[in-house]
Amino acid sequence: SQQGEEDPQALSIQEGENATMNCSYKTSINNLQWYRQNSGRGLVHLILIRSNEREKHSGRLRVTLDTSKKSSSLLITASRAADTASYFCATDDWGEKLTFGTGTRLTIIP
Amino acid sequence: EAGVAQSPRYKIIEKRQSVAFWCNPISGHATLYWYQQILGQGPKLLIQFQNNGVVDDSQLPKDRFSAERLKGVDSTLKIQPAKLEDSAVYLCASSLGQAREKLFFGSGTQLSVL
Image 1 (spheres, each protein chain N blue to C red):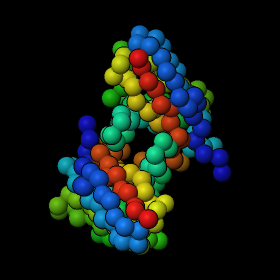
Image 2 (image 1 turned 60 degrees about the vertical axis):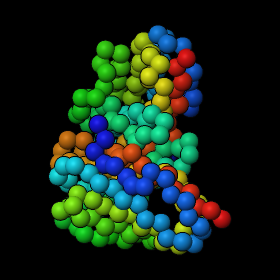
Image 3 (image 1 turned 180 degrees about the vertical axis):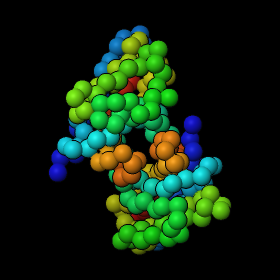
Image 4 (image 1 turned 90 degrees about the vertical axis):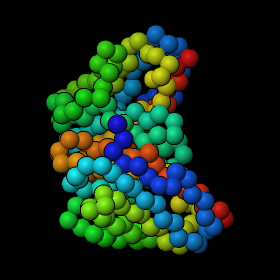
């Protein structure tokens, strides 16, 4: 079963704009991770945020976590063509399993 | 650092045939995962190994799927017999410790069952 659900399912923006995608989940979590998947490739880990953290940055990425709303957002600033990919959130629910969401397909228009 | 290696890259079989996938994780990574990713969906965990022991196989269809991890390193995933609904990408991933953090994925095996 899918724990996380990303929103929107698909997003197209102009190069240089910011992209925001959201993830909602259902149960209490230990941490939440974001992964990127380029077409035909495996997933690449982007960033991890723990349940006691509210915001985290890594380069052009900013992740927020609101455990009261069971939601997270991933912001990619100053988007580039190379950011075109699918983005997945994954939740670690305290010792059970790492469960991936349904993904957001991001297209950057040059 | 070498990544997670998977083979074959593509496989086409007919229903009721058998197929096997191979995975070589990153050296030193104790935990190995097999995920199934159906087109347009997120990866779904099939089985998780800690060294050569199974941690979680609750979503593995055990009547047709089997997996093993020999000597805590390489792993094989087998499907016998295959069904049409098994068409998917099978992803192998590994992580350094027991915590399910920062998984490294291989490029996957794309399976088509006709």
